[in-house]
Image 1: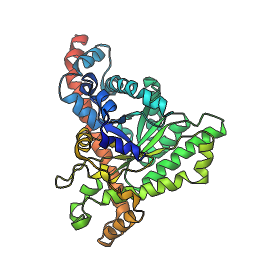
Image 2: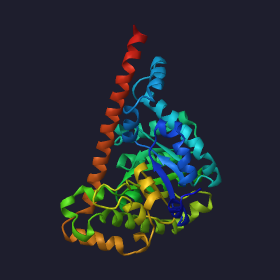
Image 3: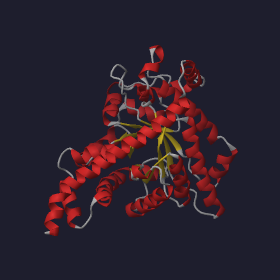
Length: 365
């Protein structure tokens, strides 16, 4: 039986994705149950998620031993582990992917975050992972840094489906959208298929913990929603533009706007705050498992703030009056996001190396 609360998100035209992947979720049947009962229609991952999944428990140990014995190590070994999980998850979502004609039912795998400022390296990594996975409903995650934007255009041009990650502002979103359209337009000049999937992931809750001293009173935990509101307005306007309509008429799919980082970080705020506020047609909300279960238990959509067209600008104006430079903060948040994922990446590889070492020593002995 479908949960009526999570089903309500689909009723307003929003897809609900899970921001988590572990071998236990797959092997226990929990992910299949979330798809069946909680209307989950896609999944995202990132280095921090995999770091936690591999470091806690032993479910990956046998695969690490086998892959190490086969001569793999470091990043190559990790991507094999990740694809073992993600291709299984992709199979679970394949009926949704096919029924939606590629609009939904995706899973995501991130390129190394150490490449965030290396356009050429990112282009090569995205192509390699796309080829290695050979999975129709796998998005390659590329950060929306300046170098990432260059890589996004080239990857779309190459026919690689992309999840643009680490976007923190309307300007960030528009840069990603422009890169997507440029890639499609280049394909159109060569009469190539324009049905190349993409989503643009705007991070929300990190705004509300970025500078606690300036987020006070009745506007606490509202800045992230305001930034999202501004981006959503730009998203809707872009979909009505002549430039997009021309691509759509030629067969292109919209690059859907995705809300990321929608778990509540303030313990004093409702645990379903962002999910309730960001229900909006044509979007995706990717939620941590705890947030998914909380919303399924007691969440409620009631007049989402995104329907109030002036809300975002009014809130942002109040913060600016108090001295907040939202453009500078967006840039800082993106830098911090890159650094955080890079730290998780290094810890992840170190943990895999630790588990690999006994096998590698035995093989070389």
